[in-house]
Image (cartoon, rainbow, N blue to C red; front, side, top):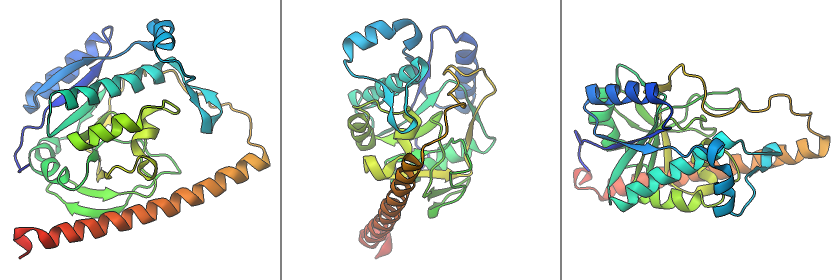
Length: 265
């Protein structure tokens, strides 16, 4: 995959969200990004059918709650987009949610940086939501024209814009086979799904100011019991160790690949 590639995009959009579709389709047309609409699964209307076809509980275990209908629909819609990439045998593609809004530097990133970044990582995330527990920096892999590619130890959440290689799509479909947490959590947990993952700094896409299609999460959950708090702290240390080992492995692999490339001779 060389530079200046026209990487296609798939846009997840609910049938009722006509204004969103008009906005993002117009933006992508102006940006000269080839795109295709993926009809989003409206779990609020089709939950009975979903539970009949997928016989499992949609429980967000770490938060001790059931997944919301909107979260389930979003999750299944992303799987549909990933399967489209595999069926079309595309070397790489972008997945957008329909509330994506673009930075002025996005055209430069799309034309020049993204093709190079996808040669290093099977998932390149270029939109994200930071919280107090997420990293705003990371280990740098490549410096591009509009952004650099980094591996954060605590990735940002959000799933409005990311690119995957075909290999990444195949692996993600497998990783998403059990819906036990919202899609954005599964996407960034590279220590669990084991797919080469990185994100850009800065992010070149943000979520536009629309009302959320996903129900607000419960912010009034009861406080954690001491035993559960301790369990989570121990688990967090374990995840941190796995992520450090992952970053080290990725850097070693990148160095070995660079040593084998003709340009390094």
